[in-house]
Image (cartoon, rainbow, N blue to C red; front, side, top):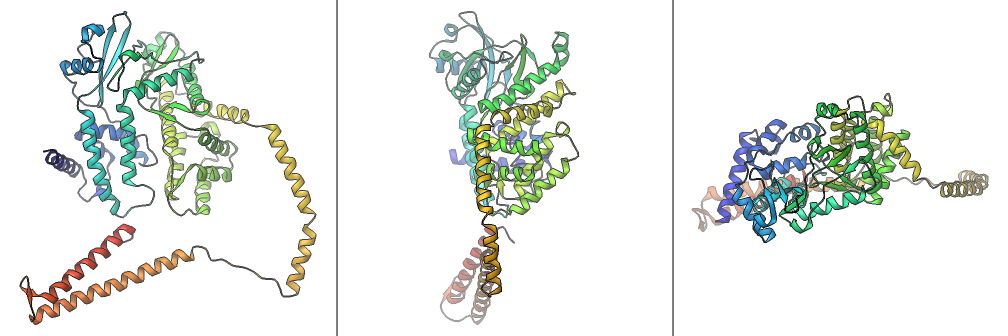
Length: 529
């Protein structure tokens, strides 16, 4: 029965994508709007997948990123009886014993969960986030289908950077974390601990005794949405000050804590009592110390406009997915540099520059690690918030001073001076040997002993490709010979019969089919038609 429903789901997915323009396979999808509409039609799982993909500019180009950000959770609320049943089952008590009040109508509905406001017996107002019934089973089924489709897509000609199976696995990893409310509870506590000394930042309190993997109970924050600029202004808030504090704290999360909010869109940020409150912690990002050092190197390259430093930092950050032509990468980075050279650092459009860097990485067989792409996406989302509430403020106005200050704080002057004096000593010591080495070189040349060693790079690859091509030609000739020979035998109509034709001719056709199929698969897997 399960297999039957799975096959029906596959047919439904195929029908929806065909309806929205995928009549020529994957390459037939060229309109981001059609893809977004297809995801919305396929329901909660695919909406969530699209939302996760909107955080991956290393996988999708900018038009798809922008369109997927418009995806909304158009889902019907679950019945109150289902919600009551889940809460009581998870917390092992009747609803009336757990809460003094519990709103029957949901305050918000999403693809994975819905939220109700409630009041504890102690009088504290809370929000109760409840995972939708059966949502995990539905997502597991859809992910299994996507894995099978990804394996089929992998056989098709494509670039080396994106492995569709790995993409699906990453999607499942991201969604699985969002499905675990105990993970979100841990995120809130860690975020609160990292920002406990920051007076302008707050986050909701978590009630552990009412929290499980399927139910999350936290403090209700009754604030003003950060996007409601008119109300904020009427309440006497300085919008530019809010934007500056928001950006400064975000860079503090990144550079100092290594733990940051991955989805700082307006719906997740409130203003209450002169504090900025984050209210959703399902998607968080983290970068280790080593990755931060690599990222700092990249920022230093941007700040000093040093192309070599930028290139080397990108090589250190990226994951190699094939042969890399460093000269070509350097050329692509130089092209990005020349594009922005006329701008001051404060005038650079950060989202566009990030998209240019991702494009250069894709062109040069470099995959950007997920933690870095999540960071870039978070910064771009934050810039959208800042533009909305304080258009006169550019995120680079905050980012550049913060990055420079942070980089300077990381400088060890004593260590740098030691390295400088050591290099000067080694240079002076080696410099004394230059005349002697030059004389040896001249004597070798005059005596005819000078030898020049030349190395042809990438010759092995060319020979390998030539061998493959030759093998395919040989197999093609064998294939043609089998077909022609079998046809002649069938034409004579002599010898023992099999399926109403001479057995030798039939065996020849079978052999030709096997050789032909193997040849076709090898060509498809190579990606070179």
